[in-house]
Length: 203
Image 1 (tube, helix red, strand yellow):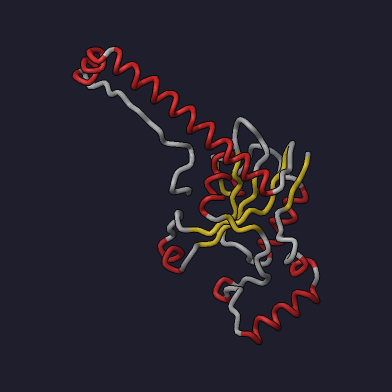
Image 2 (cartoon, one colour):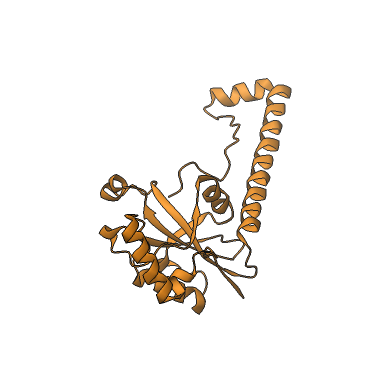
C-alpha cells in the first residue's frame, strides 16, 4: 500500500517547525494579513492543495462516492493518513472532512473543506465549499498532475461513450422513425444524453 500526502512543498514547514510557524504568525499579524480565520479558531495555515472547480470535477470523475470521514467503511485508513487527519482536526484547519472513493477502483482520497463564505456557512450550503486535497492511499499514490490527467481521461471516456450511444440512438430514429413515433405515443421516450459523470454541483 502506498500513501501520498499533498502538502504544498514551499509551505509545509509551517506546520512541521514550531519556530517557522511562530515567525509566520508574527509576520502576518504585523502586516495585517488575515490568512487564518479567527472565527474558526484555526491554529495553523492551510498547507494542503486547493481544488479549483476544474480540478474538483476531474477528481470527482475518478472518485464519485463521497462520505464523511467517520462513515467511511470501505477500507482501512492508513496510520499516516490518520495522523494527518488528527493534526488537521486538532488545529481546526477545516470545517469538515470527507473520503472520496470509487467502488470499482480503490485508492481513496482524504478531502478537507471549508464553507466558501459566511452566507454558505450560516445556511449550510453544501454546494458552496472550498475543497482541499490532503492525502491518497492504495495501490498507486500519484502526483497531482497525474491524478488530474486520470480524471481528464475518465471524463473523456465517459463523454465518448455517451456520444457513441447518442449517435446509435439518432441512427435508429433515422432508420426506423415509425417505431420511435409509436414509442412516443405509448409514453416511451427516446433519450439522447450527453451528460458526463462530472456534475456542475458536487456535494
